[in-house]
Image 1: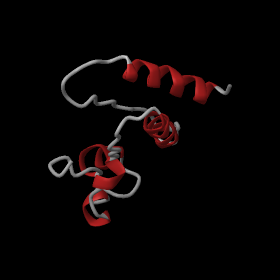
Image 2 (image 1 turned 90 degrees about the horizontal axis):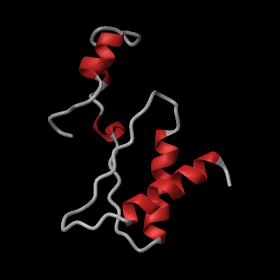
Image 3 (image 1 turned 90 degrees about the vertical axis):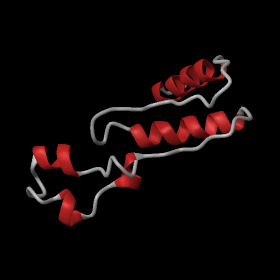
Image 4 (image 1 turned 120 degrees about the vertical axis):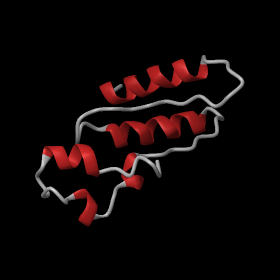
Length: 90
């Protein structure tokens, strides 16, 4: 079993072990290109396979348009931090 699949199985079993009266929310954070989307997709599939309903949301779906996102330039760390995501919509 790969390291990714082992992590997916670990988190899946933890989520399935939670008993609450509201939806369980799982946040995945990490550096760009670290594999967050891949992990989230595999975890979602594993939870669906276990009979859970999943709503998968990603901040990529809430990016500001380029004229807002890149107002400080496309390579600006401050611009990326302050303007990349439309947090009000998220």
